[in-house]
Image (cartoon, rainbow, N blue to C red; front, side, top):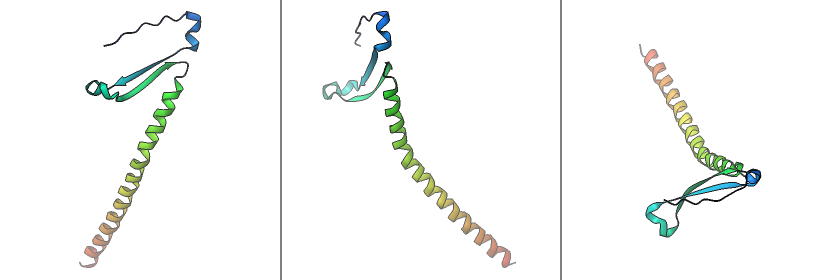
Length: 90
């Protein structure tokens, strides 16, 4: 575990951003970054990146849900037809 201490004057805190990068310990030689977060002046930057990543994930999920919904509509239509056939055969 690394611990670095950086002295910052109290009046400079508003201008400072602390960025923490997280790396995969097993592949430190490859410098494989798992993720990062930032606290301070530019804290909105990772939030924006996170929102973009969430949106990139939600688009295929939404497409999948639309497909599932279409499938459920088709199944429902089929069940209505089967029900109608059963009623008419009585």
